[in-house]
Image (cartoon, rainbow, N blue to C red; front, side, top):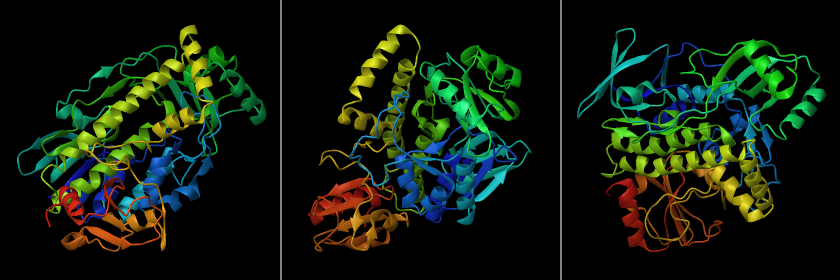
Length: 473
């Protein structure tokens, strides 16, 4: 029997597998597809995900494959200069196609010991108080202590658990493809820039794989979207929207997506959890979806490992839903707002012009960018200074930067006083004494996911917080 069964080998499932293995947890990843998907559905990772990769020592692999871009144009496509003084040491978006993201995370998960099994489709789930088992389409069964469904917006796991997925159905579909084009690159770029002045759901540009990725509004809303579009469908819509088909040919793949917005009513049933698109779907405005799923995994991984390793406080697993459900709800709201601002109707265009003026104010632009990039999240840890419940940026320490010290996946006490102690929690929490640490408090306690659990200089207060997040001593 495995410790954890992860269903789905996309970015969420692979990130979760790596996090579980970091804590010594046995994990099996089941993916129904025989081969990794070639679809370039996402084109980059945002600040908080970049920080996460740095916290786990993976960022160099991503930087080697990607390209840095300034943080502008991510709210409803309104282009404004990157606001100053963003609360991060990694103030850029990293352009990198999703197949490359998947490959890096898969290689990492396998390297640290995850058992990745492709061509394994789950058809039934059964659980009791002690374990959960899955039946696969080949008739075999597999058991584990816990199961996490990371299997996308049409999640089999969610459906088998009969978890409601309320929200709004798709009202506008978009065609997406990876193709070659015959139009010269400079002419194509000029034409795309002209069309995007009014059509924010349209675009053609390099995919990062030597071809072009295009998106164009579909003619209608498909029922179930099970049949991919044809190249002729793509050409017809390009002619309608842009007046030219750009000479598109030789498609690598063609697909479509809608603007449905839904969120699972609950993220857990018994020993089964949902994460990523299995728990929430929304239009791709702002490029938040992949990042939201990776951050789900980062939140759940250490908590699930703590439970399996026997030291989790009684309600620790419950904090996964209580922390991540509101975050996804906020993302759904901001994508709804962006969808309105991207409409070509007169009323939304008036609101868009007003938003464009407001974003000339640095504080407004910063607020929106920090929301899109997930660095403004504050979990509800109760009363305390504003920093409590927030992630800490990659601050400087005498021996280097903070995030390098977090690669073990343990908690961390940064202590400028030299008078505090983690006592018998030392097997779960590292203690760094550094009088010159670039922090504004005498000491800061970080959870394994980098969120601030406590600040101060009081040993009793520290011990109370250690007990809350890291179990009894």
